[in-house]
Image 1 (tube, rainbow, N blue to C red):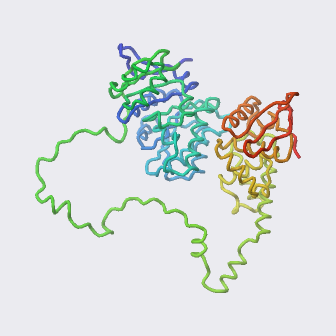
Image 2 (spheres, rainbow, N blue to C red; image 1 turned 180 degrees about the horizontal axis):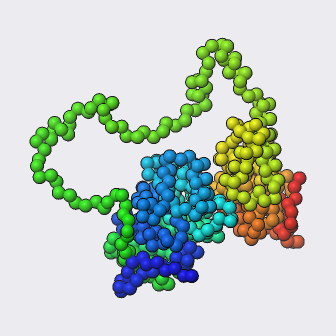
Image 3 (cartoon, rainbow, N blue to C red; image 1 turned 90 degrees about the vertical axis):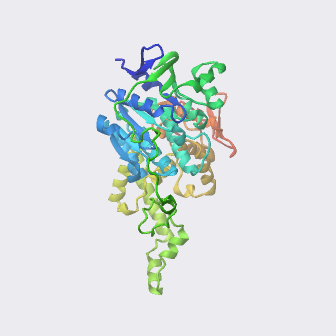
Length: 499
């Protein structure tokens, strides 16, 4: 069944429709300067499609929370939840098919990136049985997939960019249809923007953005000037879900509205303030009476500060504290127990195909059974342990400088591909044959050998490895810069060769 939703009217006065099923397969990019009507367009799309498809909105300014009362969206205040909680919330939203609005208002830039990445990760990593169709709308996408590094930390930027790349590049087969809106195409990462096949281009003034918009719509460069003349709410549309030729449309009205109104001119008060100087420049009130702006949470103290703050005041208490600290042998024993629990978890043939959240819950239960409940790692630490275990790297090896260097090199890849790179590095380091497509697919969490080959191609495109075949069709993978190479391995072998 084809579902055509009405977005507005064309320049000729006809209905401008959008094929919702085609949109789910081809994704959408919306571009326009501030005030061009992007948020209004997204709201129209969300309202018209709400009865037909599950939705999730990444909302950096809290503009879309008003959808909740009219259409039943669940508003999630990201500031009140941890990254782990948002990851689980994303998974549960897909399992129970609940439309959501992730409200990131009130968080600083780094907090927005981290929490958005966690929530998108939950949507992406849900079990295959719950890959229902879903529209994932990201407003101000240039914040979450920046073309260049900004003021946030590299770790937060990579987390967010990886999540956005997964959404736009690999989300389609998982039922996720990305709809991203940006003020400037030049600020949006190209690998994210390039995956959209439908475009709605609004008013823009900078030459570089007009030129890119014209290229995406298949217009001549001399026609790019038309983007300066577009009125608010008017867009040029192109794509299989919209029109096969560039089409001018005006977005229709919406049932709900943003909490922040459009700025309007308001006359100044008729009566003049009698003593403006005394009122405006009066002495500041006492600090206790002045309303305080919410301060950002203080950074965690460094290890030295923690030790100084917790140092005992007496010799006896110092001795007791030293005795309470775990010895290196106890720490090594604990790490070995955690590794055994993880190995037992991964011994299940189906473990490689389960969502990360489900695996983590199973891991926590096993830790409690073993008496390690209070010392169990958090979700991020579990991810690193899982990556290392799937790559066949022991805890002792992971502490070596060479493997820390390998892990650092893999950081440029999406999180779910880092283990594949480390697995290949482990085989090359030990002189083992290159892992087969089946082994790579299992470590990647899929049964598709074709997807495994695409993962290798992607890693090669990032300049980390070089793949080649010998005279008998066996594959050899060489790690760039490290100069490690695997032994020839049959890519079609059914099982992985291990030491």
